[in-house]
Length: 341
Image 1 (cartoon, rainbow, N blue to C red):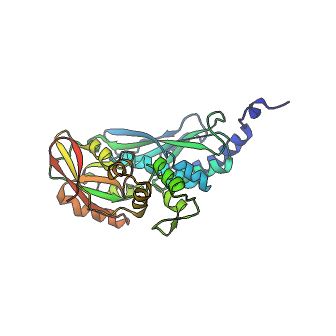
Image 2: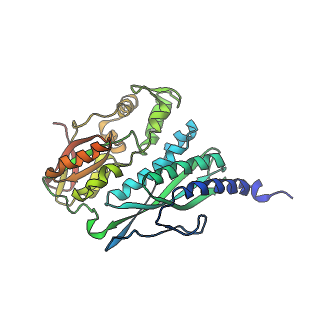
Image 3: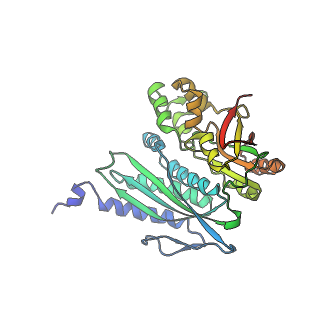
């Protein structure tokens, strides 16, 4: 008798093979805080000891159309790591230690090799942060996704002592802004970047990306940097952190400013990496749009007192993350502006 579900496009045998391979990757991320069985209906993780008033910090995000570059290049593990690092940074800005992640993979036709590669990247990112991949979902949805397409998303759980959580309320006039170098586009702006690279420039993933000495795939699939090792040792000194994702520097720094504070960014404090200069020139993108869409080489911004500047930059330097003094906080109406000198 014909398997009607398979005929409709959902292959339970492929799902079973993917789940078997994924379970081995999940097992490699189990920490001492993990509870329950792999493959259960829900993932369990203990709150670590030592907290008087532990607060759970949760965030959900995806990788956007960077996935289309990964599919085009046939490289699927790096976007899994992107997902973890993006989520880690989103809870890090609140001072939280990551505890566990849940991932979601949806595709039109489930390919066990592709699913395993995606989760291998997720597992690698989790192990790097001593974080449990507590579970997830793999869905085969042929009526929603074209062949070869997939989407991934992650939900992270972190923990922070209530009194140590960062909200931005400690920011005050006279504070300085320290920019942490990004590792390329990270996971934002890929709809515009893909149009410029593949259509305007007529390049493909194996071609050399201008001014870089690297291939298009290497430049566009550079892994979204995690700032955990650079920031965690000095996080008690910080007044606020902003993860520079969609909306750029201005759109994210403003989220951590009190109502009576203005952040002034020194636009010449750092040099844009080549990828952004090429995209702006080739795509004829305005400076304003570049600032709204891309991180421009700054993936995280810390706000702190000027007396803590050296300790903050030294901590980043120890893990080979470049930093710059990129601005200051002034009294004024809440907002972010760029000073061109």
